[in-house]
Length: 357
Ligand SMILES: [Ca+2]
Ligand SMILES: [Ca+2]
Image (cartoon, rainbow, N blue to C red):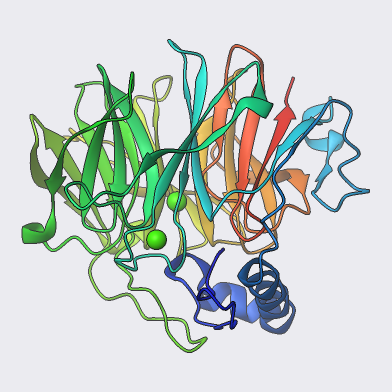
């Protein structure tokens, strides 16, 4: 994550998405913080500045980008490419019609209104042709800290602190934004399109931390619903525990939520008349979750900053590691056509691309 000023004096301000929740602190505060600080320093001084794409048969362990665990899946995921030179990559989304990937880049402190957010666009079959600033911030359409994305019609929607901003996915031009400021939104993090066509947007409810101290949650854990550019509060519940990633699980007819501040994956039914608890806790794990999604074969995956791992969830009850050693794994994208998982490594300014079969 790029946290330095132009003269690259490293500031150890901890962005909101890098805070250490109590459960993680209890496990290994020192080692985790050490890793985070090292990563911050690396990124602060241009660790993600190399601009290249490594392709095909990359030895992930040799270059320190992760290790695939075959025990969890039967067939080990294969690292096939690494996109570098990204500025705080937070989320990847596959546009299946144009067959391109979008990569949101926070640029600097998470939640800072610094007007330097960007969205990259890269052809899925030509990763070396990446346009790292396909969308830039403009005075008329600022972009500060873009995170999760979703597509509805011709519009690419991107969460940005307390607004959701729209871009024409054919040309990257702004088509306006929806402010959620009046609803008290604090840190909009991810977006899923529901079966009703509405946008469901998580609010992690934390502010960017300062001076290396993790901030306490500053607003309730919420999910908003946006229809026709009109936002409403869909659910507010402490069980959501600082909701970060969100995905629609069509098989389970529910949303899956990856909380940042809680240890369990969460399921939520939006139009519940259900008697069962809603939202409800599923599989426990290390917490500090970011991305969540359904792999091409139907397995549910969730990424964790706590131990730099992409997990698989089994039967709603257990998590097992699929890929380990991936520092600061944020909101991964899924390419169902190619069987790929694209994981943004936030601190390193990279996206690692695995084939998962
Ligand atoms: Ca920024
Ligand atoms: Ca996220």
